Structures are given as structure tokens and as C-alpha cells.
Length: 254
Image (cartoon, rainbow, N blue to C red):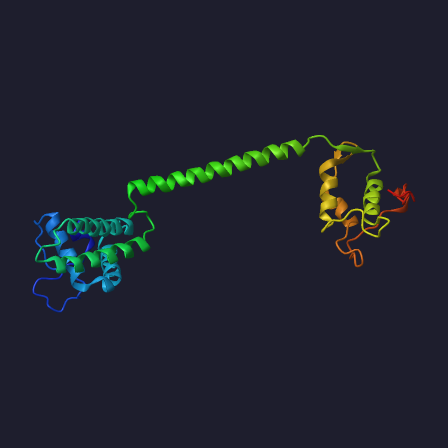
């Protein structure tokens, strides 16, 4: 009700804040109280309405323990919107048509302001809310379909199987991987290339096992330095005893 949301002007107080609502009687009906609020809005004009809004919101919060701005906002919007609809139905031939046009313009500006700060969808019609929800549902269904397709593709490539390395020969495989990085084609281009060494280490951990045991990432990444020219103190070279194979160009042309 208006008496909860808005600060009234004390009787015979002529120095009260200009945003205060006129003095009302406690036994008046809601529509009578609302006329006081709307009359004040028309009096101050749309340009000062934002200050009016926050002035009475502060009063409402200060006087009501469980004050919620969403209720205050919706109350003002409903009253402004209802009065605008009332004015639209009045005859343009009325003697007060010029005054009615000014009031309609004021209410249109008030409603636009309330829409601009609407955090609770108070200003949306039921149809607009349903339409927005339907659009969101359609978007979510499309996203879900995309994710389902991606999951299918992933499952086609994913496998629980792995390539097993003989016990004690993990580093032999690592040496072959490192050799592959240094291979060049007859035209001088690299045979294989990756932006980071992590691509190699993660591939090994994911698809290879040593004697059916998982290969820990931290145990092999020291063999794959990000900068081979300056590998750093954590780098470890493959021991010679594990370098059992040497990959070389065959000499045959493709």
C-alpha cells in the first residue's frame, strides 16, 4: 500500500521535502492513496522521477523491516502502467486533452525509467516472459544437441585400451618419440610438429602403459623440455642404455 512505500507530508508542514506525498487519511481506500502518488509524479515531472524513486525507496527501507525493492518497483510500475492505460481510453476531444497528453508523456517516461532498472522482470508482461523463456529453452536445446553430438564424436575416438610397453623399456619409447621430433623430410620440412611438448607427454600418459602400469606425467615431462636449446636444470637426458634404436631416412623417394 502507498502508506508503506511513500513518505507522507506532515499536516501543516509547508517546508517538507518536495518529494513528500500529500497528507492522507488512514481510512482512505487504495485508489485514493494512489491518486496522491500519481499527482506528485505529475507535479514534479518525469525529469525528477528518478530522484523521487530513490527518495521514497530509502524511506521504505528505513521504515519497513522486510523491505524489498522489487515490491516497491512493481507497485510503482503497476500504478503508472494502469494510469497510462486509463488515459489512453479518454477522448481526444475532451477539454482536458492537452493536460492528458502531458500526463501520458510523463507516465511513458516514468515507465521507461522503471524498465531500465528492472532487475526482477517486474515490467514484463506474462506473454513476454513466456516468449523469453521459450527462446531460452530453444537455445538450451540447441546447446544440448551440440554437446550430445560432441560426446558421440568423443566416444568414437576414446578408448579404454592402451599400448603396453615391456617392463623397463619406457625410456626406449621416450627416446623414439624424441627422435621423431627431430626428423625432417627430403624437402627440409619437419615430419611432425607440436606447439608444446605437453602434447607428447600427455599422449604417452593417455595411450601407453609400462607393464600395464600407468605412466605418471611428472615422471616423464623432464625428458621433454619446452626449450631444447636451454632445457633447464630439471631436464634429464635419456640414458644411453635405453637408446636401442635409431630412426634414419631410408633414402627412398616417396
